[in-house]
Image 1 (cartoon, rainbow, N blue to C red):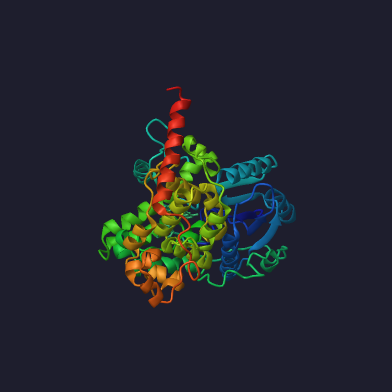
Image 2: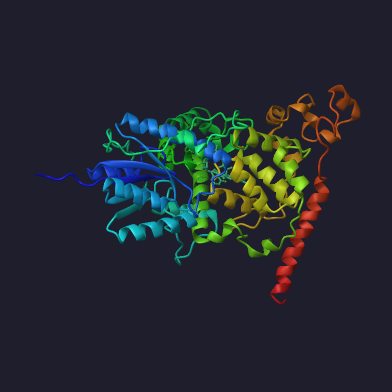
Length: 486
Ligand code: FAD
């Protein structure tokens, strides 16, 4: 008589899908019953998920529950400290293994290593895979065995060593023991109430939603991606970022589908490779965070921590609410608040405005994005904020200060984006749309716009603010010079 193998716990993390899921595939290969669990961790080391992320998590878990049920299984929900909950589940089921796709944020990675160590000491097999990035952080090193600090050589090396996994759809049926207690998603209150500020969120979280978003992008945006991705009113980018963050699609699967369209001659190869390169920035961010975990809180270039940041609560609030008086900045901040997402070009503009025009610490902006973005991702958010602030590894130089008016006229020339998100100035002719304060009084009167009443005057003068930012930079770089005794 053969004895049934003991169950394997499949610990879902940011890999909320059944296809291309290494931990699931390996669990299925054991032939043992599989216990899929998601733990909403209330322990000391936590995912730094903000409100918009929790909204997404709620919907994505519901989609995962449905997918598992369609394969005869069931998602077990537990809340509490991860190690305590895993142990409880092991005691309840006699499971002898825990399989997971790793999280690579340094604090979570270290915490998971501790859990693995403790469980292995009790003869529980604990195994982890990379199910979220093109390449495991730590794997891409230069000839001297050091981490790359510049994107282009990093990406080249990554593409040289990466081994794209074959596409898998996961087991058709997943056997899960009956009778296991699970909490109810509704009790976790992840969806905001009182008030429900998510009514403008127009997304379909989950694996099917991710695949549809990619199909839409392939049909509409891919053919001119490298040009259109910069124009916020166009459908030029994929909007895959929250799906990727929650692991609803594997990046290699997205690449495989995009490259297949280029290989079939339907779009230029260069467009597909531009998309691959953008995905590469996601890996580069994770790679930097892995090697330099301090960058969540301190500047990669330490001299930038001497910047004389201003304590300007009124400025911060005007920025958060989209009331700075600069239409492209306000449009971006309102798109973010209303939809949980902002176009990349506009993210760069609003971030530059906060850090340079308002001289407010990038960490304040990073925290706001973390709370309001559905794609909020510790590595990508921190890396991009430091890129804009000039303090990052492969960063935009601090002295390059985005002019919000020029950016608006260049990337939203016809004003579709600004008119959509800042309707109070929509009637202004294009010529003045990105700088309403320059419109002659008769034009303002003609469209019934009272600046300072219907829409704010600019909260700073850009050219004065630019000079102030450059002076601050000069002080920082000069003091670095002095510190070194020159
Ligand atoms: P596409 O243009 O279709 O790109 C495809 C994918 O490539 C994206 O989904 C994303 O996963 C990746 N990608 C593209 N650009 C970048 C980039 N600069 N850095 C890292 N990955 C990139 N992205 C996040 O996913 N989470 C964040 O928290 C985040 N914070 C940001 C903060 C600032 C200040 C800035 C300037 C950018 C930030 N980004 C962040 C990067 C970028 O803006 C978004 O990834 C992109 O806008 C998502 O839209 P998309 O999926 O249509 O992108």
